[in-house]
Length: 239
DNA sequence: CGAATTTGACCCGCGC
DNA sequence: GCGCGGGTCAAATTCG
Image 1 (tube, rainbow, N blue to C red):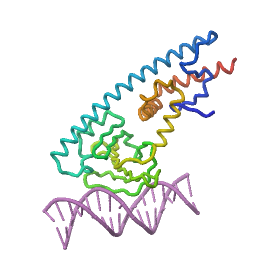
Image 2 (image 1 turned 60 degrees about the vertical axis):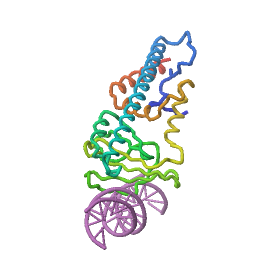
Image 3 (image 1 turned 90 degrees about the vertical axis):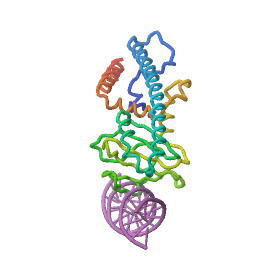
Image 4 (image 1 turned 45 degrees about the vertical axis):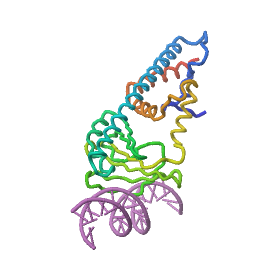
């Protein structure tokens, strides 16, 4: 068996159980406490997810309204607007990743470490770089990618750092994929093995991926997790 | 050694 | 028609 969740090896803890598992009288009290904590955490994630979705919808509405105003008042080409548009960039400063759509073109904003000079945005698809250019309005080069997963897939993307904020990557997707997103499907499938069927449908793979990333960066979480797992391993060794 | 990336050259649309 | 700028091509280079 080789299963992980949020980067954690589920096989490490001998007490891993789902909430659907019936209670057992000889189950250690500590395990019951842990299950309660797990339940609380799951409820918190649900609330955060709902808030995130409503916030995302609101931001998307604002972006669409702003794009409409910009296209009516400014005859610049769409591709020239993204990095000069400090309004959207400023809004994006407080988001890990935002999307806006316009006629089959999708803009995605992704916050990265400014010291990280790579232009890689992990979106679950395979991309082949076919060009790079320095544009007039931005000293940071723009990279051009084609979807390489399916030869017939027409999707292209451009990735460039924001002129206002070098820590912000702007990706412009052009077209629709004619195949599945393999990585997301894989993550979704692996996640769904560990949750109840009623939760299926509200799950957002990208959101969970981001949450996992932020948890991985949280030293307190890692430390607490390590202590919990090691104590369980020790207990297991003793029995 | 094949795949992926880099990078200069070229193409094309647009404004003047 | 010319120049400019964005987008693409393809040979050279790098990487695993």
